[in-house]
Image (cartoon, rainbow, N blue to C red; front, side, top):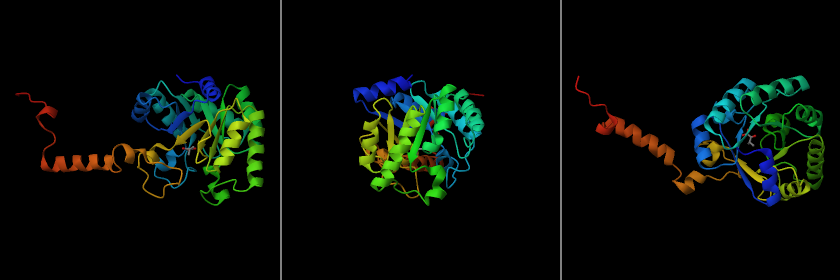
Length: 269
Ligand code: KIV
């Protein structure tokens, strides 16, 4: 099973690592067979699984349920779980809710913010909870940010984000995750911390790891898709491969070519 020390070693060796979001056991098994290094049970499950329009309604109970399912399906990847909106607003909440997702199978918890999370990071780390801090575009603050858009677009804003990274790393953050920031900033931050792996999504190629939401990279996101998404399903099997399979099933049921003899129990009764 991949551990945090493996990720640190990958960084030292210059070996990049992959991360995908995942919310269920069968997809987790497919990712194990594909040797994906890291899995994020993201609160993106609010949109990807629950059909919500933001991550805000997701609960800690949702996160623990999906973490347990993913862990049962995958014994290979490092498992990281989001603490959802408002579930780490106090130190007590952060400790209590980290316990719930760690006991469900997470090895690392992820929280969104900056320097103001330093005390939380430090207390969690001292209590045996490795923390990833998510900076840049932080979807739990979408209403403060005014939408899902590129962050840290000026030198001043980039320096502020670097200062936030320094503060949480000093407090003990084990990983950083940067979303939707200029590639140059992704590179600067990855180079600044030789022992802290930095995962990027829309943060350029120089971060140590990359993450994508699995529905995005399989072409199963039907609304607006972010610029940083690549549809790997389209390249491997054709953009509509999954929908084609659903359609073929529907047609086969209607024309009775399914189930055929080989799918049927022929017992004389
Ligand atoms: O919730 C999530 O899936 C995330 C990724 C977008 C990084 O935080």
